[in-house]
Amino acid sequence: MISLVVTEGSGAMDIYSQKLAEKLDVPKVYTDIYQGIAKRFNISWLSRNALRAIAEDRSFVKILNNLNGIAHLPNQHLGRYGNFLKAPYIITVHDLIR
Image (tube, rainbow, N blue to C red; front, side, top):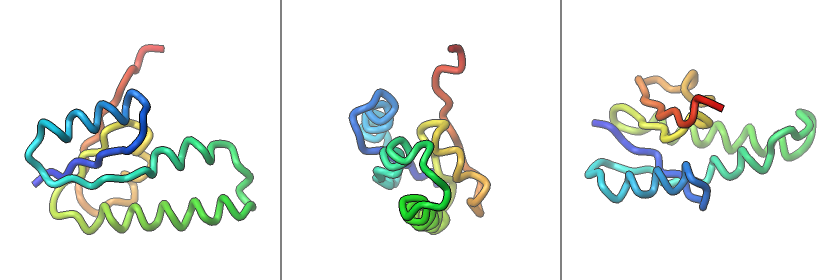
């Protein structure tokens, strides 16, 4: 079984995952982890925010590892979690040409 990770937010990739979720009859995991990634971009590794980010990332990986089957990560920015997953996963990659 494939479970779709649905990112909450108002960006184009978030809206894509939300619209896809409306059409697919699969289990879904709703998360705002992508919003947190964007907000914490380029922070100091030794800051409290970095430690908080690591804890949130670990919790998210735990959620993904508890899914039954394959996780569908709806954008390439969530691919950073792939190496920590126990099961195979799918990543949708958007806009390779820039």
